[in-house]
Image (cartoon, rainbow, N blue to C red; front, side):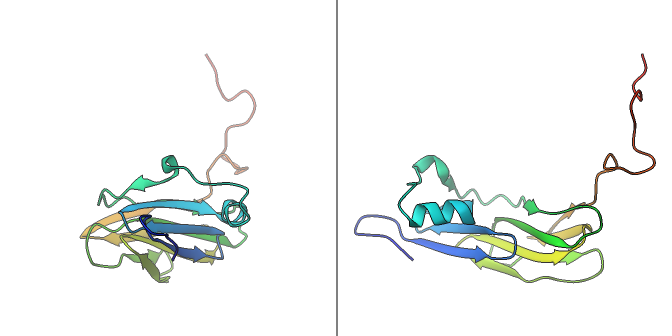
Length: 150
């Protein structure tokens, strides 16, 4: 935690696999940043402004990051605001349940796998995130040159 007299305290949750961090400020603001920005801030090369922080709203809407295609395993992340006290439950299509971590009133979950759907259960709601390779990425059914006809 950081914070000087009169300044909000900042707590950090590092997600090393996907290379992102979440930060929670004691005055109810939060943000996400990547390893490079964190390194630059620590070195004094960049000072985050107030516009980098979002006010906590309590809305249950997961966000996602990471990924890779072509059947190779990659790091994935879902995260968002925690509207209540219950830690979200993340369930992958194969039944695996990577653990979610809570920091202040935000949460995050990361895992390493090939692209597959994930379902987030949060405050009695269910969010399905497809995490599937887009059809246009080289499948036999993807449109090719000249697919558009007038």
